[in-house]
Amino acid sequence: MSEQVAAVAGGVIGAILLLILIGIAVYLLWKKICLLPSYEELPNSVTPTHPDASLEDQTLSQQSSAIQPKSIRTRSVPFIIPPKFHGRDWINLTNGEQVQKDSDPYVTPESGPRCSFHSLAGAYVIGSINPELYKFPEDKSETDFPECNIGRLWFSVEYEQEAERLLVSLIKARKLQPPTDSCSPFVKIYLLPDERRYLQSKTKRKTLNPQFDENFIFQVSSKTLCQRTLKFSLYHVDKQKKHHLLGQVIFPLKNETLTGDSKLVIWRDLEAENLEPPSEYGDIQFSLSYNDYLSRLTVVVLRAKGLKFQDEREIASVYIKVSLMNHNKFIKCKKTTAVLGSPNPVYNETFSFKADQTELDTASLSLSVLQSAEGDKTHLLGRVVVGPFMYTRGKELEHWNEMISKPKELVKRWHALCRNT
Image (cartoon, rainbow, N blue to C red; front, side):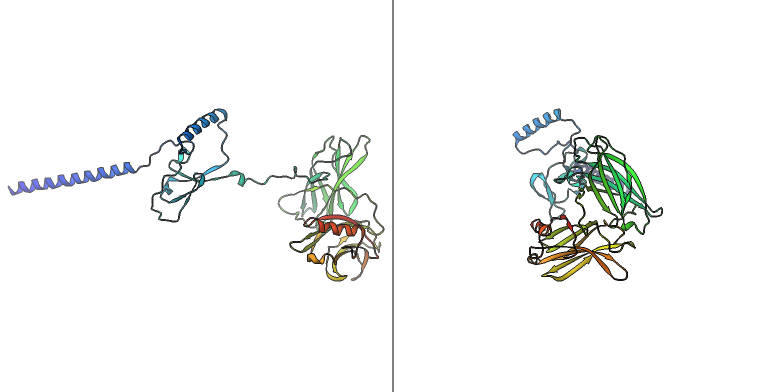
């Protein structure tokens, strides 16, 4: 009898445990089903709060979808938060955007706007990315031309160190200004100081925007490369086969890195040739600029022409000394590098001097062209002084006054050299 009672009790206890396990399993299954996210098809845009506005937006969206092709997309790209980050708190901003708030990360967020992408159900839009901000800057070299521009030239330069060859690629020219309506341009390329030999491109017929795409080779040693200058002279051929100079580009090689892995592509505006004959002792071209905010006076020594050497027996070495004076007292001087063997040297070097704006009425600049001689001796080939009315007249005074009237702008001019300054 006792064995039967024990068996019955064991059966009851086993049944109760089985029911408990079944109940736990059912509860866990129900909880899992209830907590699964509902994946529903989302609307294409955020639903407005006003009922009339929603009807209008729906009608407009249907009309626009019927008219516009499906490939057209909005400019802004939505920036969304994936569903797994929904356990964060967000601050509502304008235009339906949200930002995370420094608070308890376990607080459930309020329902925010839904993303318009069906594959990202439950994601919150917190902003957008404008693709316009990540575009590369446009090349405006073919569209932005200053006033009184007579044309622009594109070319590339590369130097092969082992073969000692200078490779020049003539690419194109734009916006040429010929004397007649028709234009048949070609280019002569010089490697200064040698002005007797040149390489010439093919003539392009009847175009103001020629495309050359031609390559040229100059044999030049690496030791003298920095002392050489490329000169591009662009001509127009008329019906009588006469050549008319449209402009030129001067490109010194000393300040350029030409031995890299890629070609150096450059564009330069054409400059009109100075047709005036050289003065008695030659001429010098330089630019002046004054920055009133930085109290900085800038001088760009460009080139000289028609220099008269003192000693013709040996190759002349010519440099230019730029001196800042105040009340005829020496303040500071700087020198260009020397150029060998050319009466028309090209420098293209920039110098800066500290000068307060109140000193411009008493300061002056002296540019002296000097030829090196034996030992430490030098010969003065010519000099020019620019400054206020106290020291100068004529073109030198005009250049100084124009510099002051156009702050932060380079003012370029030619000046005749003299030896009694």
